[in-house]
Length: 337
Image 1 (cartoon, rainbow, N blue to C red):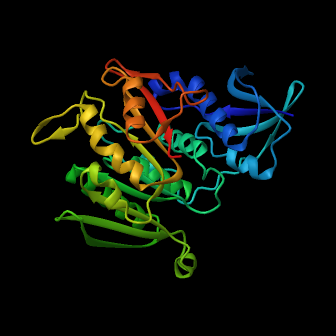
Image 2 (cartoon, helix red, strand yellow; image 1 turned 90 degrees about the vertical axis):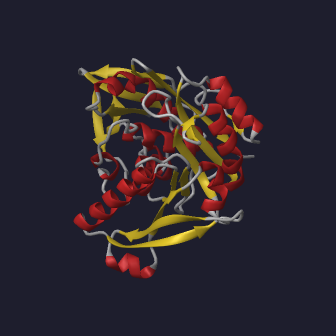
Image 3 (cartoon, one colour; image 1 turned 180 degrees about the vertical axis):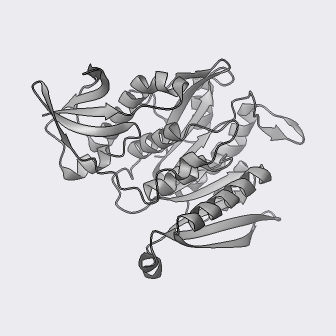
């Protein structure tokens, strides 16, 4: 059976130029998790962009998983010269605009962030888990990755040194949940660190409706202003299944330490050991970066030094794509054995 997946148009013209490559890679990662062998191609059908793949191995559960694809707008079975449409099985926990509405300079493309989540999940031992996962972003900024995790039906933990960014993410989420009438609660608490000191945490518990909330069918989101090197303490004993983060590009934003700019390598050397500690066995970490300020081999080596295993074979070995004059983005995915 041959499937044809319509690739949606994208408002960001720069990102749209990279969609052909990235959409095919995401599809291959999802199929990797399903252990399905299929050749993925990019074709223009009646002037519209489609991903095509041929396989007889897609049962209903596999189709639900493949429907996660961040760039697919419509699915069809290809029968000769005809396409027979059938529904995608996307089941967003919250409205899919949660990660899109908040705009600010330097924001990571929300569709790319969703792709990162899907690819990291596909590389992990928890790809097909029916239960909500815990997603950690140790450099969360204003929370795009956290909001994408909620859309996927997962719990989220965000850490960032920028208190202003954390406050803006908090304010936005509170207003969004109130406006859309999601049943939720918000609380502030103090998180004590083992070495002394405490961090301020803003926590949310939410559900789609009151009955689900009463049953305890809820998701959680935590926002903490703190250092990524403390990610294991912040995540707590429960740890996390996935770690997804967009590293500073070294253009508008750079890692800061003692009032000055430190190297990305220093950031990684402080952050990655804590990430490995909090990541559950079989979990995966995906970090995107600017190839002009950080080399893929350097990031892979830092991950290896921290005790993680970078994935260097297809489809995980090359997500590079042009973003703007000073940014060419790539992503490395590693797993915890």
